[in-house]
Image 1 (cartoon, rainbow, N blue to C red):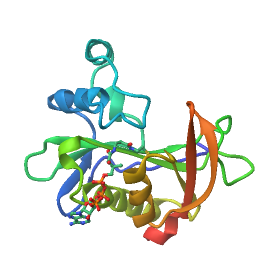
Image 2: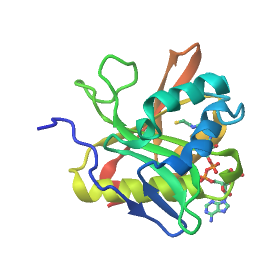
Image 3: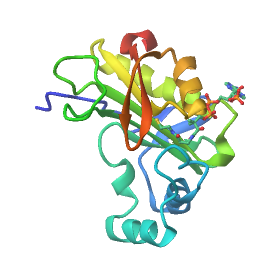
Image 4: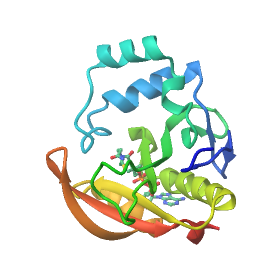
Length: 185
Ligand SMILES: CC(C)(COP(=O)(O)OP(=O)(O)OC[C@H]1O[C@@H](n2cnc3c(N)ncnc32)[C@H](O)[C@@H]1OP(=O)(O)O)[C@@H](O)C(=O)NCCC(=O)NCCS
């Protein structure tokens, strides 16, 4: 048994979105998320398109959202890929924890540039965390984001995450923010 469960639901609908597994038609959207300089501004910069294309050719689109807790954010009407949302476990050997043992739930969100400013990331994250709160006991959930990533920090605050500290990683200051899962129940 997995000692650190995340969520098993294959699909989660929200008002405007569907969180689902990746399929081949997502390829352009998934490449866009890796190669757009604005999306990657606080994530180490845009990756070269040819390297990203080679990665997907070798691993398939499923590499992005096949594991438990990882979803494509799709438009509920058109099914277009708007971004990705992941609820993972933060490895104990990384900095940034609120428990002794580490392995806390950690939320990561990426929206294509055209989806920013419409509340879509908030809606997707709320839908996911509600579904997770139905499956798992109450526990901390983390967001780790570059302190300079104001949009990401604003979203975390809107979701109810409280900043609890900062640390250096990837050559930049990171902010660690936390909330309790059952705040979404
Ligand atoms: C971080 C990110 C997901 C935030 O996206 P976002 O669209 O700003 O976030 P939200 O879904 O909360 O939308 C909030 C905005 O939508 C607006 N909005 C419009 N309609 C809305 C609605 N119906 N409901 C809520 N907000 C709405 C809000 O006013 C707010 O706009 P503002 O930021 O200009 O004030 C996005 O900027 C992104 O993908 N960045 C690059 C990837 C990244 O750095 N990820 C962080 C890794 S953890």
